[in-house]
Length: 398
Image (cartoon, rainbow, N blue to C red):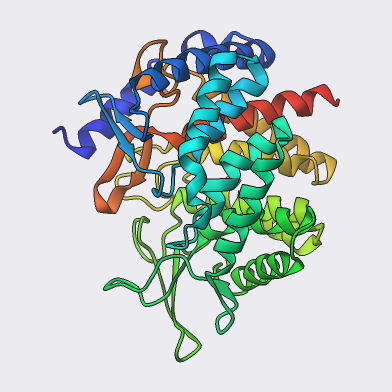
């Protein structure tokens, strides 16, 4: 296997070589081209998948497709992306594939093994219900919210992310902000108000404890439930305990933007703007706005980039622009445009029939664990397609 430093240097040289025809297209034409590619790529990906598995990643160097069972935390992204692609292309084959993948995922509405029910069930069934109005999908979402609520720990006013292990006694990770949408949506749509209360309590606790003075988020907070206290602030996927892991900042930015939408609590809007300021003004954010895998990664500027973090940030910034003051909103949209355009370049966007059927290349899963390094990832595609859809809807209202 080639070294990580070699991959980073190769990546940098390819970036310098230029961004191909994507620079010449209008954003409207670029997005239409990308969504047509998404239809073709996901038709290919579906044809390569076992009936009882979900796609996980694809390594272009080894040309190996990794799949998962439906309990894997990413299992909802693939059907969610299928629904987004169907929404924009109206492709009947994509819709059939989406329905088939929901059928094997549906049983996970009872899963209580970690905090990721929002990713698993809302990105998939949430989009399916929004697009189709099928009442059975809402029933699944409601049940999933009940399952997720069992992870709430009143003694620390937070939802426990992972079960106790040799690594953590009671971990609460910044990613958890993303799963609050499931809880809040259910309460806002006829469900028990306790789900919203859990979500807002968790979000408030995260503001109080999870951020440093510069508004960067820690990845993991480890608690003692018995002692009702915070033990340490650390990381699992970042460069070091006090670094700013890029995807963690993206989760936080997206999470508080979403919580403002769901609750209209201005504290969440304020927090989202603070996180955006940290990210956009950081000295280590490259000119093309595609972040390094950690803002404090060793070997910058030769560190690997993370397309997934850029895709999440782009989607969040487009939504945040609609709540921000006009000048700030224009800045958010401009940065999101830059991210989408550069993710649409030959450097990041796969050519038809390549990349195992995935759209984006060059994402980083868990660098310190040597897991999913410089590969295609399902959540990178999900948020990239979401960002493009949000951009189109935003421009249609102007």
